[in-house]
Image (cartoon, rainbow, N blue to C red; front, side, top):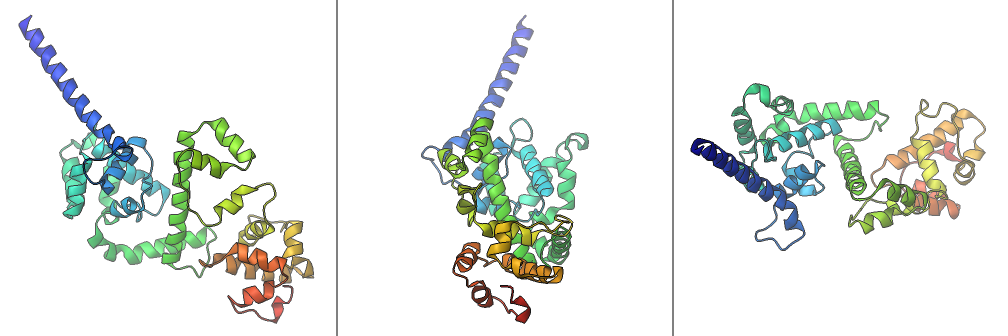
Length: 321
């Protein structure tokens, strides 16, 4: 009986120990709502992402822990899975304070490998083998060695999906970063609200209000204009959709009447003229400094040629403008 009691005591102590570790880990979320006893680090933001099983929303965290250099959604998911295995108390259970210390000392990669190597190979999961093949995502010293290869891959993928031939790797990454940010905001929103709330907000063009109601600050250029009246949006957004579509995406070349009227397509007599005008608008929208609302204002004032001419070189074939 005494032996059984000692076994029960040891199990109880083990459970209590694990429970305290788990509580300490999950208390990370509270430091963002309460007055913290220490400065909040990017490792705390990472721990919050691990708890929620979502990509980090903090820009510096994405930079510190490799999400900024994991260019595809698949790679970002695998990187998050690696950290879940690393930080979840039910797995390896490394606390954010230790993770932050590793990063500050520049030994994050080595320590991650050391922690996983302590586990039998059959229990390491699939994310660690992937990490061994992609260490450059976390190792700044390896970035310069992989930049050329990474840039080539990014350019090929971008152009294959219909991206501009003139976009540089820097331009592409800036666009991807903005899309990642918006996608992350929606991830948080659909967790905080119900399906009916989201549908009703969309139908009534109140998505932005739903974001604010749930404490989510969304800072994306022109998003408010696009979402405010999605049933009666400005024709410039239909123009952008038409201009950016490939022939495969729009084989019949369908164009909204408002676009044809407002942006000169009704003046085109031949398909070649339509395609040339479409190319001009596509070139405009591909610019990082493109301002669709300024183009819309120029259309209202009847000065599209003057506005676009101030940004790019136009020739006589652009007379349809």
